[in-house]
Length: 315
Image 1: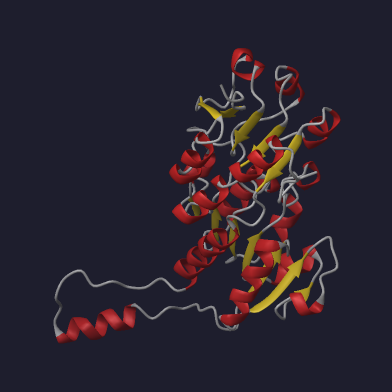
Image 2: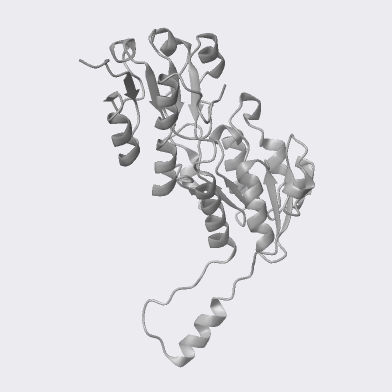
């Protein structure tokens, strides 16, 4: 008889090919429950999560055999990395897996807002054709528009390159000094100045506690009345009450929120009542390709279980 396979607990769905791959190498237990029971955790040597499973000290205390926690995604704000470190539990993730998908989301939503395209759904006469063309002239364009980026990391820097390619004037705010060669021509700017001057703002900061309500009442009070603001980072970065109040007072503005605090958005939230707030269900990384790439975190799971060095450790 061979050695028993390590037990891998999976709390949220993975793509089919990576899932089949790890099934060939481990005893995989899919529970599709973001709150695993003590019985589930007792024998697990690896835990694979995505967005909605919180790995904290309580969960870790119930998993005495755990050797690795894997986040099939980028952010680690749902994992207590220090508590894992203190217990000798490795943490791995897929830091670049969804970058391009989120960039696609941001650019798609921006273009749809700045330059909506009129579609013909039936044959029309020559006179109507001219009227339709006249009505379809967009009052706004990317060309010459100022794009402000809150965060200039892996995703923000790529959005900066796309903005520059669309002839936008790009500014950014970041805690770190960014090498000029990596800015794609973007200009470093104070956050309050960015708020006042930007016609489009895209948010790309991480989910650390210090970023909670980074964009609060003071930030919203500085915004242009017709700003387009897109948040595809973390929901708690924006003060929702301040965002709602701003949208209500500035009907020409457009807020596009893909991430929320909490998720899902409660049915009684005033977000639903604002026609100039667009809500999407946390789908910035929602491409099949990105989901599969994130799911390949299972390779690092097996590297840890086999005593090898993981390629993408969080510590």
